[in-house]
Amino acid sequence: MEQNMAVIKYENLIINTVEQVTLYDNKEIELTNREFQVLYFLVSYQGQVFSKRQIYAHVTEFNEKDDLHTVEITISRIRKKLEQATGKSDFIITIRGRGYKFKK
Image (cartoon, rainbow, N blue to C red; front, side, top):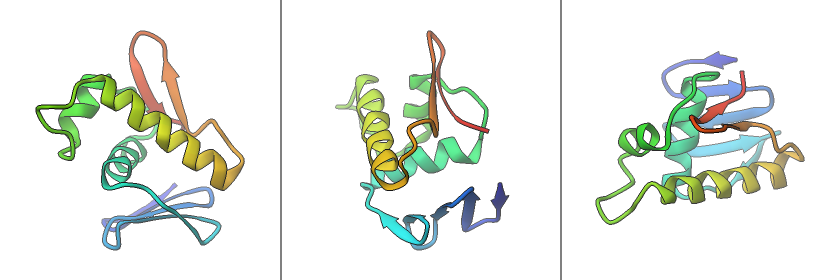
């Protein structure tokens, strides 16, 4: 993984925080702001497991009306979009009973 303040690269996946874009093989993956924030958070701490509550607390796009189920839905949407763009479904891993992590 290559990383600096503005860009995180993982294999052919590029997350640019300045431009708020996610690319795979130089093709943009359209994410909502919430999806982008969750993906960026998980990628920033590859291999570390986070509970839904921790993800919820770290992503400012969530508000008081949302619940922890919103995290599950958001991660499901991210997975689907990543799989459509990359053909891979294993970027975000569920750790049963504990939470989620971005593969290392």
